[in-house]
Image 1 (cartoon, rainbow, N blue to C red):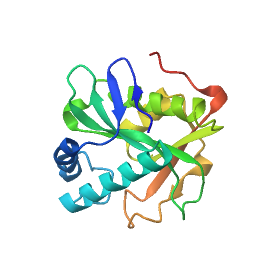
Image 2 (cartoon, helix red, strand yellow; image 1 turned 135 degrees about the vertical axis):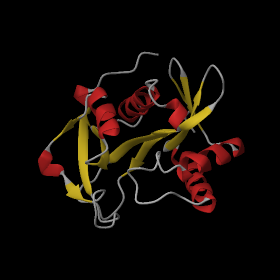
Image 3 (cartoon, helix red, strand yellow; image 1 turned 180 degrees about the horizontal axis):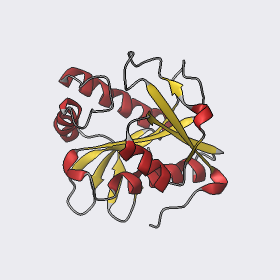
Image 4 (tube, rainbow, N blue to C red; image 1 turned 90 degrees about the vertical axis):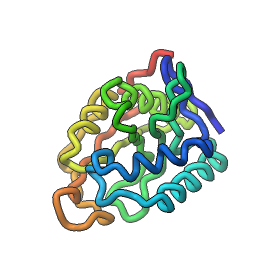
Length: 183
């Protein structure tokens, strides 16, 4: 499994000690504002089991993110193939951080490392990111990564019930347009 490092962060395999803070993040309605629901502890733990299996099996996926200087777990970032049933295909970059980690540039820094991995190690021609149309913070991260949106790619997420969270947007970054992370 690949472990990625940036100036301030470590993207790594999940540890048992990550389960409780990950569950707390997933139970936080502010962190989950752009998702249909918060997760139970069981759902949260099951997600980590899937993340671990993907990292072990593929060598990449959703990495746990820790602050290098302190070892503090602050969330996740990574890459995953787009789920079946979506109106597009490819490999998606994503991130989610605990509220105390917001506003420090960690999401952009971690996501940039994952995107660099996608291009340098996996040889992908493109990476995309998806969020609900109303998630302006994630959309700002996408723009900082150099991703662009074509409104023709906007879609209604089949996994989200009718309502304000259903409309999704897709941002794309072709390999030739990336801005590599400084390590």
